[in-house]
Amino acid sequence: MECDLAEAYGIHDYTAYTARHIAVLVGGLSDGSRTKMALRGDKLTQDQILTAAIADNVALCRWLLSTDGAKGRNRPASVLAILTDDKKKESDAIAYDTPEDFRMAWAEITGG
Image (cartoon, rainbow, N blue to C red; front, side):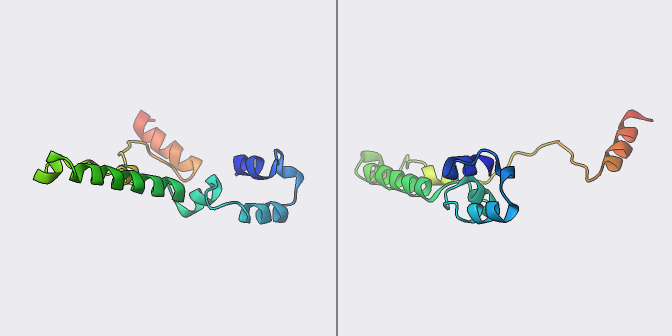
């Protein structure tokens, strides 16, 4: 949010403004701003999605005109599919809700 406020409005110290004023400014950020994308859970901007779709269609047209395309083999991978793939890497990280939860888990791990 701080980066978006600085980029869009030139505000480098948002604490100098009221929370209501900042909320209004954040509401006015473009749909491609980092803040709005994070709130929506978007990974890509609309421009990035359209660009990837165009690249996919150009590659598909080119492939269809090739000997591989005529034989139905070696179809190009979709750039859009690669960019929007939501496969998440599993992590062995553990999160705790409270410091007490962490202390209890630490005591179990360390034996004391």
